[in-house]
Every structure is written in C-alpha cells, then in structure tokens.
Length: 292
Image (cartoon, rainbow, N blue to C red; front, side):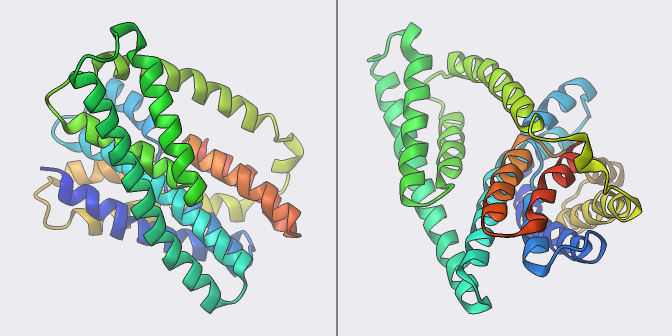
C-alpha cells in the first residue's frame, strides 16, 4: 500500500533534496561545485535508527509511520552509494570520466549488493528451515552471514555491502515460513550499542573551534534544507497518492539524519583532506549541525 510513495521518496524526492542541498551548499557554504554535489548526496539520507524510536513515541495514525520507516531504511544505502560514487567521480577528474564512473558504479552496486543480499538471505532461510542451527546460535550465525555478505560485496564494489545487508533484511522480513523474532531482538540490542558507540567516536573528532565559522549562511542553508527541500520532496512524491493533507504535512516535517550521514561525512572528510581539499574538513561539522 505504501510502496508507490516510498519509491517516489527515494527516487524523485531524493533527487529534489540532492539538487536543492547542492545548490544551497554552493552559494551559501561557498563549497566548490564538486564538494557541493558530494555534500548534497550525503544529506539526502534520513535515519531509520532515529525515525523508528520517534514513531514509537509519537504513534501517528494511518500509514505515515510505515512510510517514514521504509523511506529511511531504503534511502540509507542509496544515499551512501551515491555519495561514494560522487567521490569516485571527483577523484576520476573531468565530467565525462566522472559520469562514466558514477553510472558504472550504480549498476555494479545494485547487481553485486543485491545478489549477495539475496544469497545471504537464502542461506539463512535454508539453515533455519531445516533446524540446522540451534536456537542459541541463531544470533551469532546471522551476524556471521551478514558480515560475510557485506564484506564480500564491498570487495567487489565499494559500499555495496550496505546494499547487501539491506536486501538480506528485506528478503528475510518478507518470507513467512520461518520465524526471525530472536534475530530481530538481537539486532535491536546490537544496533543501540553500535550506533551509540559510533556516534561518540565520530563526535570525539570534532573540536568546538570547528563551529566558529557557523554564521547566518549556515543557518539559512539549514532552513532551506528543512523548510524548502523536504516539503517539496514530499509534495512531489505524494501527489496522487491518496494521503490526506495532514499526513503529507507530517511527512514533510520529519526527516532526521542519523549515523549514516555522520559516518559517510567523516570518511570523505579524511579522504578529501588527504587529496588536498582544504574545505573537505568542513563536511563533518556541517553534517553534525544537520543531525542536531
């Protein structure tokens, strides 16, 4: 029932957010064109690890909670992959070379990440269906399988592992023959521990001096991202969907960024600094401002 809206949000909606964020970063944050496009790609993601607890507390009626949850789950690997491919395009040099790298990377990421995700899900299904895994070993076995799938996918194509993990989860969640409730509970506990620790590690790299350059242009950029990009993205993505106006307004008001945006920005800030991009270091504080 919500598939059409989710597909639009992670395609048309993501493109709208990417374009508006990139243009705003170029004119307001004074990034060069390449860095503006990269930063725009980083902030198109929303965080399911932030949205799901929010929806648990807010408990909105109708389909809005499900739409926001699935948008966050699907847009995370898309946003991370796009950011990686944009970075590889920047490194390739020249518009034509960059376009070739990005297009080839998209195809490889979808094929490789999707294939390893489906294979990993089938392995889990096969073993669980035949009761070859004792109950007390289901959690470590599932963790082993998802790590192998992600690592193998990353070996063939950078960041395809995130796609494989997401596809594996979607496949397992949509089959009805075996129960995965123990794995889901374990995953939730693991998620809280890992993300809490990772946020602390990433934030510990920041200094208060990194935020001294924050002024009116940065605040205007944030306002455009929240009050222009997101509402336009939702408006075009939900046109003709049958959602009520108050539901569309609620969707336009909720787009928190999470750990994927922070971690991707941190990775690229390091690589850009190594490649001589002086502005690259500003990706981290600006991304954390968006998250906050």
